[in-house]
Length: 114
Image (cartoon, rainbow, N blue to C red; front, side, top):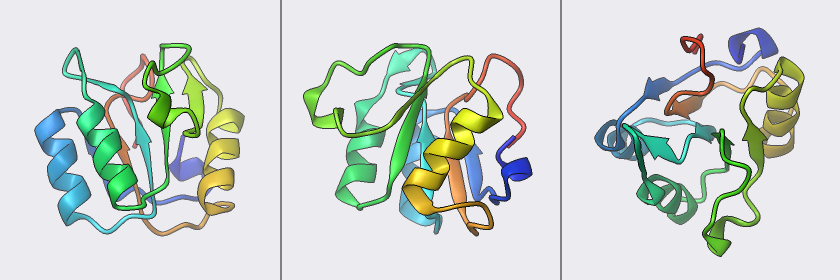
């Protein structure tokens, strides 16, 4: 889905450890983040993205993220459309052809296409 919108993918991870490593080691412009990794809430990932100034959006089945520090972070609710993901990515980093992006966690109920 993301590739079809003109963005490239720097990496995908579904664990807290993998996410923290990817944020520290990969060069990317934006992240799509599921607050639940491995079946548990992982605010550490969002905190690290905020600390490093990396724009991101939550992609979640939850209607809101409880922590007020994330109130400004865009939210895309599952299930979502190409247009919804495209709109949030355009808001965060501009239209397609962005060179590096990372997806953290699962971004839909179907196997990720990232």
